[in-house]
Image (cartoon, rainbow, N blue to C red; front, side, top):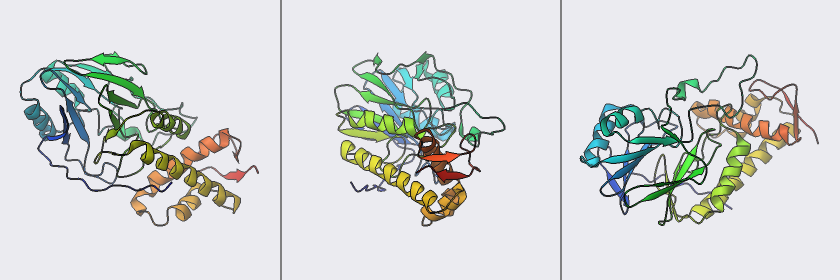
Length: 302
């Protein structure tokens, strides 16, 4: 199934945009190769509110959020995961509103660091974040006229969660599913096997609309996510083909597979290839000496 991305998006910096009944989107002005036009924060409710992903620690974004809140009480703040473009503003928003902060948990890698390994993603992790309430999969949080169900979706990050607005068909998918690009899955923070399982989990749901952490909505979720799954399987096959044809290093694989990709993204592409290789080694399709590593050598097993 072909995967078609939608890059049409107006971030409307400094303004709240109504995207569904009782749902506002505010986009932080932190555009980059990885955040698209910026990080989306969402305000849910009419009288007593919830906020999903306060975003980066940015004064202007905080003031825009507070202006959209308009003095109404905020009972809950939901945080999808602890990358620094999503969670750092939480502490200041909690201080201003007194809201209860909910998330799967503090930041952690998907697997333990190996001997001598340095986490290249530490700079992007919000290591100070601790929720008031740790959310379990399927847990329901009731607010004033709204109920949010937690759907744990590890993969992009070990503590990644999506949030379903019960009775509406709306799911806040954060960085797990985005209309404008594929999600980065980069060890040790993320894990490809976890990502694929979480993707299947969302495909099995009946959501009609996904509001992601970056860019515009996913309007045909099942079709799009099946396309994402096919894309990942194609990438896996391309990696296996490169190894069977003689490539032994991730650098060589990236040069071939991502030859048409902006070179500034090749570092992230290398981590994505490593995520696939970790999964392929576990499944016995690829061999390497010791644990899979970004500078390791890889050979086919069949």
